[in-house]
Length: 496
Length: 97
Picture 1 (cartoon, helix red, strand yellow):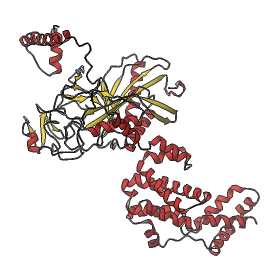
Picture 2 (cartoon, one colour; picture 1 turned 60 degrees about the vertical axis):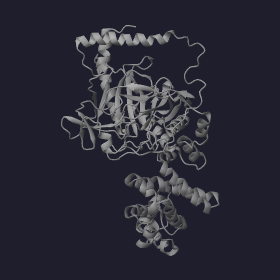
Picture 3 (spheres, rainbow over the protein chains, first blue to last red; picture 1 turned 120 degrees about the vertical axis):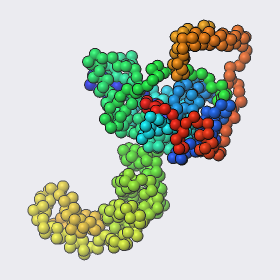
């Protein structure tokens, strides 16, 4: 880590490590074959194993191991040929066995790193370890007096816990790390990363210290923060709380806190167990996990293109700017849409210059119109009437000169709204671009006649006014004029 | 190895057990006896024995094929208390585990 890029909070340095729990995309649970599925009616995906009945034995799910290995390889971790399972003990109604089977002494994966990029620059955040463990069930309290309800469908769902080193130095860095980690897990199909459904959850370990010191301050853990926005808010609050406390001579307590999204504050978690003592010991019901070298090799060879590599390729091969490429890759489905569309255009165009033009148009279209509709309406806009083939058909009209770009943009939004194909909408609305010389010439002449002062100024050397004339002509045509032709005619006319 | 009274109280608290004074005394001696019994393992000569996990064949792994779960009735059959399709427990105040 470079000291120069460390961002400071006044006279304090913030030190943060993140623990992420991500649910793995298996069909069945980690140690039994109950379905791993969100949203089923309560207590319908349970069996004697995940209910913790006596006499049952866990049997390890091979796919969970595979997905863990894949995530590790994608983040450059070392895969342990031999790892161990331990029992982590605590009493809570959502944990029927009274212990969670986790990996402690020898995790499946160690080391690795993730490259982040914020305004403070680019840095590597080291990953300490990743290990497999089982999820707990769910306690429900709302609307129930004096009792709590327990649904154990989630008990035994496979989790990968991903622990970073305390390398993160600001809320922005934490959020960027989480976004990139989630991207990586989604691109490798290890997890769907769905935060609303709890398949990507985050604990924050945070302390402050004077810059330049190597000793860590007292660490506070903030549990279960489940959106990027809340991670940011919780950290800002906690940083300010700790600085205020230390500067007024108070001691920071090592404790677990919860973030309350309503008040925007963190507050100590009330717990009857004052000192957590998990009494880890080796899980006697599971042998050491010895991986076959072929499993690791298979996963290594079948790793898909990773988000970082994709950004690199979009920049160097397709010529996108880094920020455009990053926006595309942040949404895997949007990146796929973009590339599929580009491929379709490419098959019809041979010359470099033509390709460049198409690429610019298509990039701008996807990053503005498609992205906006995606954010507004969700994944469904990327298929059906506003799917990639139909978007390409629409843009072909622009390239062919029969429709203006601004018309196309408008049509796409309406098509998404009305669930019609953009081209059918173009016909329905009778949209055409005015490209005829005569018609355009009349428009240009009218604009020049109305703005004689500007014309004189332009001819006197004020080149910047050219855009003003183009805008005025476009406005007069209500967006229907072909801007390239308008440019051409204007240029001729203004020569005088 | 003999357990101390505070060891026993610590374990009792983690186990959410309230022990009477007499029980603390009994547990102290009984748990110590168990530990001493297991401690016998430490006298076994294990030089030359491979560590667990060493030179083992790859662990057999289960295929990821879902199988039928219990019915909700079957799942809740052994529950001391229930409410509809849920297990029911005394109110938990803490959250966020």
